[in-house]
Length: 184
Image (cartoon, rainbow, N blue to C red; front, side, top):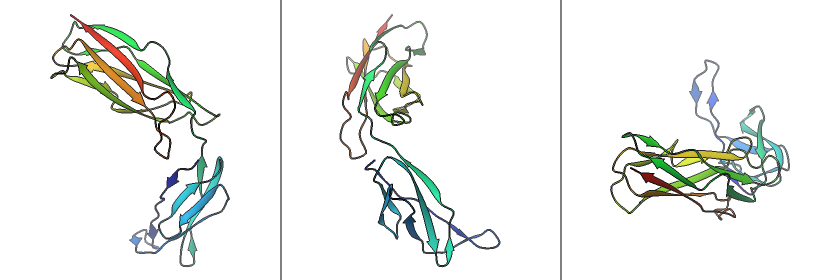
């Protein structure tokens, strides 16, 4: 809710080839508000499902359903925020670190969690986040990730995890800090 999207459309001729067309976008429900009918910029006004259509001259697209979700309330770690890895191989992996998103029903799935990692003490450590520097919550609102060490062993890795609302404000509970200690 309060977020925008910019849909795309493509006109095809009777042979299935793309052809140039100018589209005009419209919403079929009050859940969505068309901010700019020429670009399709659309605002989610209310929680629920809304439908969009594109028109090019006398041709009209099938309606596409857009689901507008309520924003999440907060994030918190679920499970320990500290892990210890005994480095016994050149490629070592921490246990899974987990974040839980909280909010109204249906709002906690597919929430984007941004991650960053830093070695302590600072230096040329080979640290990466698995699966990457951004994860999404599952249908149950939980996101998980791991820290991989592939280079010089630092004393520890500090990982911060944070989420933002559609308007850019920080979600309550952000950032969550995790510490992974590396032992010889």
